[in-house]
Length: 218
Ligand code: HEM
Image (tube, rainbow, N blue to C red):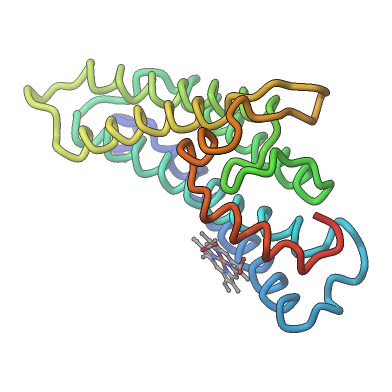
């Protein structure tokens, strides 16, 4: 009871609930695409359900939806307990929650439609990429400001790791997603050839492109 009044834990709870749901849904999609590799008939000849489109849905669901929600729940929980203060802004934390979930819903709609930048683990198109940057910065600012308000004299070591991760993901996402839009849901990376390869891992791209040729629609 006392901790509920002392800290903002509702948003942590909802991030945890969302994470469980995304893990269940994400692994179910994993089971479907694994089955498609064994029995291609399970593609049903429906473009929205083919391996090439559902594989990124699976990886986005388990990494960004499940993993992202776990990460945000963990950071918002532990920064409050280790600093002995409430989150700097409960409103910003809820903005982060709803923003992140809206991004996940956009991924669930756009990926099966085949709207993709074609970059592995950065498939979402440019309007969603901008939303990710905004929500990520809201998450980071809230975390940093909570540390700034802390009651303890030193910064707990796990918070340094969280901070490093937040800064690293910011530049990874922004630089990797730099693109020139040619339509509402189509853009081209500003990097090409070897520069693109240096920004992300070329070998993985080739591997996944080969595998997505299992599907007639990719
Ligand atoms: C029943 C559970 C799961 C099944 C059946 C499953 C199935 C699959 C399949 C078929 C692929 C595509 C492999 C390919 O392109 O050749 C894949 C990729 C992947 N899955 Fe899952 N998955 C499951 C659970 C999970 C979970 C829980 C996570 C993470 C939390 C996860 C993370 C990934 C990642 C990161 C990849 C890309 C791996 C790579 O390309 O090397 N999966 N999964």
